[in-house]
Amino acid sequence: MPVAADDDVWVEPVSAAPASAVLVANREEPMRRRRGKSLLAAFVTSLVIGVGVSSSTAESRVAQPDTASPSQSSGLKFTPSADAYVSSAKPKANYGSATRLKLEDAPVVEAYLRFPGGNLTAPVTRATLWLYAVDGSSVGYTVHAVSDTSWQESSLTFANAPAISPTVVASARGYSSGTWTTVDVTSLVASNGSANVALTSASPNFLNLASRESGSKGPVLVLETSTPDTSAPTTPSGLAVTGTTASSISLSWGAATDDVGVAGYEIYRNGSLAGTTQQAAYTLSGLACGSSYTVGVNSYDLAGNRSPATTLLVSTAACPDTSAPSASSTAPRSAQRPPRRATSSVGSLAGRATASACRHTILPATDPHRSRRSPRRLRV
Image 1: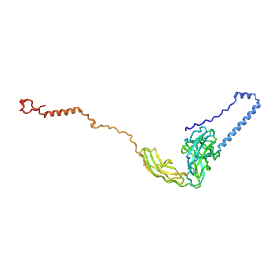
Image 2: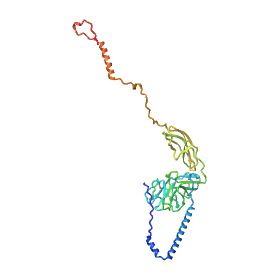
Image 3: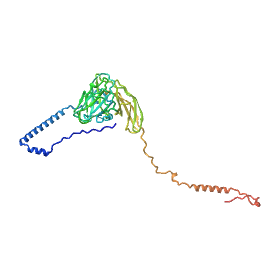
Image 4: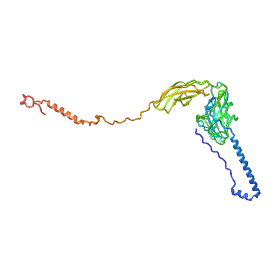
């Protein structure tokens, strides 16, 4: 479905009296009344300035968001299995593939997030939702519960979106752009760590948060339990090469296991981290042809525990031959020798053969009177 464009906020213009009419009215007023109005205007102006300063001071006292990232926090880390926003301006539009979660008061723009949870071995003591703010906001957002978990990221619209609880569970405001915000959502998390939440905002303008499609800035739910998970997952087994080219190497391995759940795998190239994946396969690209590399793969769980790495020495395919053969400066002697004329050679051989045949041919005698004579030879 096409993504709807942002709607502009229309502000009704305020009409003002013509300047000439104001000037005439002022001329007709007595001097005392004009002086009284001037004093009143000065008092109102000073009052407005004072309120503005007070408001600015109050705004500066709003708590700032955490400067850390969810990767630095302790606990089990879950990413959403689905997230999307809906808009009343486009009630049948789906925004499940967008890299932003948008929020606005009018038109109504709301966001939904669902976290799958896992096999927790201890009760949850605290749940923190981390959201990355693409834009700063003094209004911020609020978090609500959603009881219906049947919605799908690829088909969610404003028309079919499940009802949102009116109760505000948590809120965040007064944050800058390009920072992480955190809210306590412990009451919304089930015993297995799953959660189904919605975000709303009273902001008159679009408020943008990063969605799971944005990559490393996507939402993260961090769960702390009464018994911290300190057990690392098993080491991936059977690391093998499944394909090579002159610039890439494809790898596969056996899946690791963990008492809570494996979050993913880290792939290393010559000791440096090359990438991560949640699948038991990965392709290293941008390599040099005809070169050898030491690759390693480890696994990590939701608490950040990592297994020992399994390593393998691999090589890319040989470099392609792109050089044309060089031409020889000295031609072979057979090429320098002029070709013999086939016709003259054949004619010469034929002539010698005919002459030889004529020398040795005995002609019979035709004269009856010379029949007793010996045959004569033909001289050539």
